[in-house]
Image 1 (cartoon, rainbow, N blue to C red):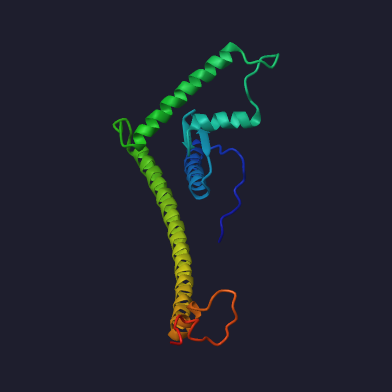
Image 2: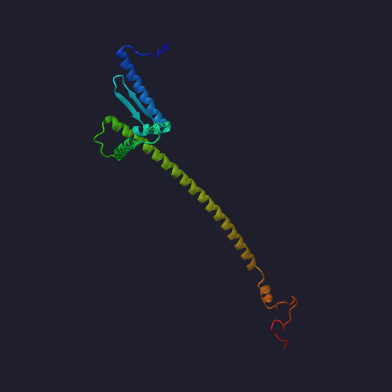
Length: 213
């Protein structure tokens, strides 16, 4: 028998309400993590329990994600004339300083430094982030290597074709040289003694430099 439809209303029993909150909170956090990993999405989740305890997950920096959301929705702090006040600028500067400190700390953690302040949960999350980063780097590296190998193969094929063409031309030149060297040598000798501009009439001894005496 399947589960019955749960009526969406406040659970009156405090114990049941807390159990349901814990289960659904964990399920929601799990879905947020899966969404950020599978779809490479920037996800920020913030949950407050009935007692006021906060639970959150952020695939990136929580403050940066919230600030991005505020910018997307145009929720900047403005005065009545639409001009930012000095207090607003001061708050933003403080937020930027805090963000810089967080990023520097995260950079140190990614480099394996200053890990003494991290607990088991934070270390596991850091390990997961590093594993995802390494996988992406390897994927990019193999993609670049594959493209480079393909380029080398194309260049090699082009060089082979060019080599074949040059060999064919060389073979033709050698054949022409063989045909030229096969001509009658006496014909060449006689042609050298024919003066320019004279018809190729039968030669007499005087033309060849011999006298009749």
